[in-house]
Image (cartoon, rainbow, N blue to C red; front, side, top):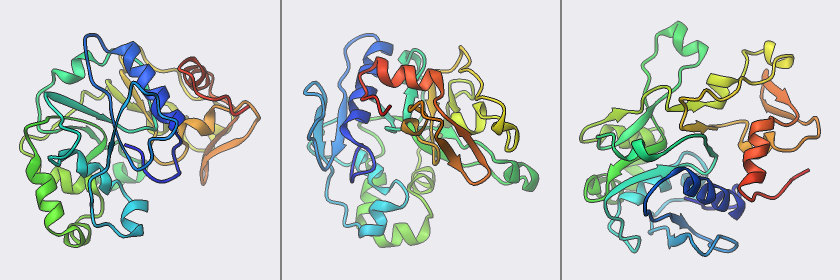
Length: 250
């Protein structure tokens, strides 16, 4: 799903090529978007259904993701897997389609503060799977009153979790976080490079800062947020981006 200007068509094309390299058998790759320009012709571009969102609804949170549950021009069938654009495919995706759940979501990675407060960990919607003939009620409940949905739930993933039929989570070693799993803790990240991707991982998720494109240039640039940051290129992310046809930012 791509809307607005934060992610260019390169993100869609790189993800499509990476999925093609890590998924066996026939599949359909669909991009819900408001602008198909520059996207590979093998990608099936579908206009995002009308969502009655104001500017803040498009800019904050992932509310447009809920449109994948609408009965619309996409005409989705079978088992579906949603993948955020700021995601790196690191292993076979085949088994992600076999795991039952309506939906299957990421179990949100805890921050240090969450561990200290023993805060409940919620589902995250960066990667989720569901059957196309299920969960239409998620869209229907949202479309009935988008304003009420946004007032009642801080993010679309909380809304989705609340309306799940049979929520399940990915195995923790299948979908991992660059920021929470591979980066060294704050202060140590100044001198320690991110750890390599473990062989059991299927997907490496980037959520918040940094994004994949931030760690592709090899210019000694600072990336990250606040006191949790690194510098320069992360070699395996740069290799991935260029291998699947992304433009070299330098």
